[in-house]
Image 1 (cartoon, rainbow, N blue to C red):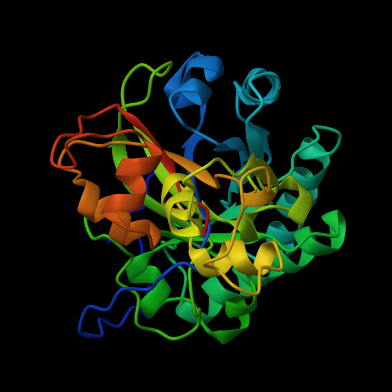
Image 2: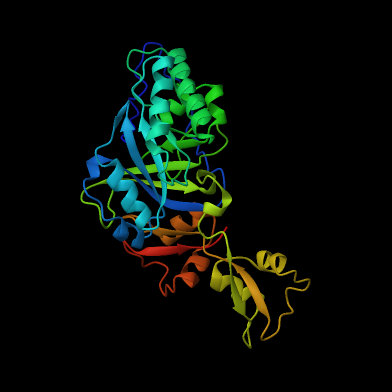
Length: 330
């Protein structure tokens, strides 16, 4: 899947210059992901999962042709315990062709046990007007939703999100591609937040030879709340000298969250032996070149102190590429 800012080369293209603005995630909890196809070759999903990858989107096919590694990839990903979604690269040029490709996609992924929303990857608009692009895209999305009973994702780059897609597509969750900024630069107002964000096409992940697309996904990508990792709590027995603040710092949460979850009226009053429910960790993140702990904290809506405490980091200024960090619960 290679999104490009030149994607929207079509007959009625109009370049609209707008100031950059960051579109944030639709939900606070964010999960580390990748998307793959035959181009990644044979993948060791066990190693990818061990590195912190939680969600993988697998190309099911293009048009009405299955990806050669489709079956191998989904079976290996599920065996590795990853959350699995599928996308189809749409080649349709008419609404009728789009509906046919949606039916093919639905039949291809039936019985695979996927737990993430199916996605439309429609990015080659050559020869189509803006109205025609939207008609084809909506036909595919509506037919896929009817066939699967699940609302699909729309994969698109930030440029197309601003200049191509119109309001009808906005009811479908957004998977935005934009390489470089901390959040996708989208100003159209069609979407209020992203459910998926493909932030690099040059990622390095253990178990994959060469580059791979890197993504972040919110809880909205899962077909049901039970699918989301880290949604449960862990139990903690209060020790002598503990404070609610100290426990919150240790587990990367807040005093308010602990007090609410445990029905504590006075946050200053806990006692040894008291058993507390503590929000479980929501995500893991593989450090990329150029990352800082401060930048990661900003991205996930947490603090440097919470990340350092949770990951036993003595020097917050010293992290390294490939290091897997536990991200505090939102």
